[in-house]
Image (cartoon, rainbow, N blue to C red; front, side):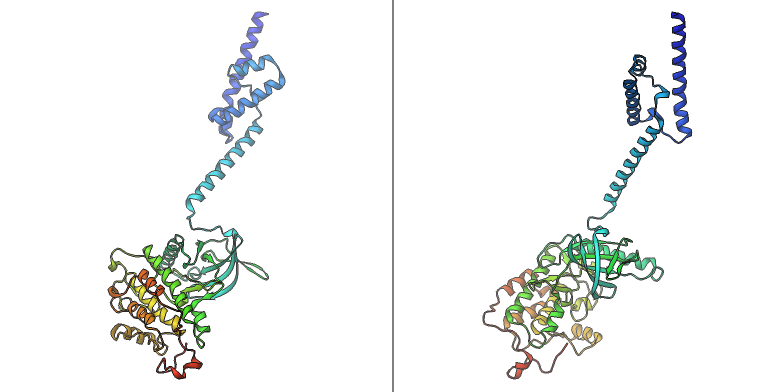
Length: 417
C-alpha cells in the first residue's frame, strides 16, 4: 500500500507539472498573459487557488498550494481574463488622462462646458458672441481662418502662432483695468453654437478666446453716443485714469499692447474701462530694433511705427494721447483725411488732433506730452497716472455741448464722426 500510494503521488505531481508547463504556452498562443508573468496576476491566481482550497476544505489541496504548486483544474481562466481586461482598461485610461494633462496648455478650456450664443460684434477674422462657460456669463471671440484649402500651411501656421501668442500674453494678466481672461481653445471639433432651433457644430479650424462679458460695450461706442452732449470733466478724467492705469500695469509686466484705441477698450456696468483685444500685443523686446513694422490702427499709430522704425512701449503712450483727446472731445481724430494723408501728415508735418480751446491746460498738457514726436520725451504711463490724479475736476472743464457752443469756438469747423 505504501508503494502504491507513493506511486500515485508521483503520478499526480507529474500531471500537475505538465499542466503547469502547458499554461504559459496556451496563454501565449491565445494572446493571454501567462499567470505568473506579472506579480499582480500571480497574486490573483494564488488568491483563487487559496479560496478554492478554503471552500473544498481538503488538506491535500492546501498542502499543494503551500508547496508552491497550482492545481490547473482549479484555475478559473475566464475570471482571470476578465480581471486582466479590467486591469488593462484602468491602466490605459489612467495613461490617457496623464497624456491629456501633459498635452493641454494651462490656458485651455474644456469645450464641453462652453455654450456659444448670439453674435454681439464682427471683425476681420471672426465674430464675438455672448456665451456661458461653466455657469459664468462670458464673451467668446471666434477666430475663423477660412475654409480648409483656402489658406496655405504657412498662413495657417502664422495665424495659429499669433493666436497662441495672444492667449499666452493674456492669461497671465490680473488687473481691474484689464479684461479678465478665462481661457481659450485652438482647433477643437467640440465647439457648438446654441440657437433657438438647437445647436450648430463648428468647423475644426475655428479657435476661440473666452473672456469676462462686459455689458457696457466698447468705449468708442459710448463716446459716439455722447458726441453731441459731451462728457462731464470728472467722467473724462476717470475714464482716462482707468485706461492709464491699465496700460501702466501692462508696461510693468513688459507687455506692449501696440493697438491702443477706444475701440479696444470695454466698459463694465459701473463704467470702468478695461483694456481688451491683445491680438497684436507682445512682450517688449530688450532691443527696440527687434520691434518693427506697422502694427496698430492708423490715427492712433505713433510716427515711429508709421515710418517703420524701431519702437518700444512709448508707442502705447502716443496712442493714449490720441485716446485722451477722443475721450474729451467725444469725436474722431482726423475725420477729413484719408489713411495716406494721415500717415504723411503725422510723420512729416507733425500733425496732431486739434485741442479745443475750452480744454483745461492741465489735461491739454498731458495730451501734448504723450503725443510728442520724440518717443524719449513722452512720459511713462505711471507718470501719466500721477498727472491725471493731480487734475482738479471740482470746477468742471468738460467740453461744451454742441448746442451750447455759441460762446466758445472750440473748433474752426464742424467735426463729426
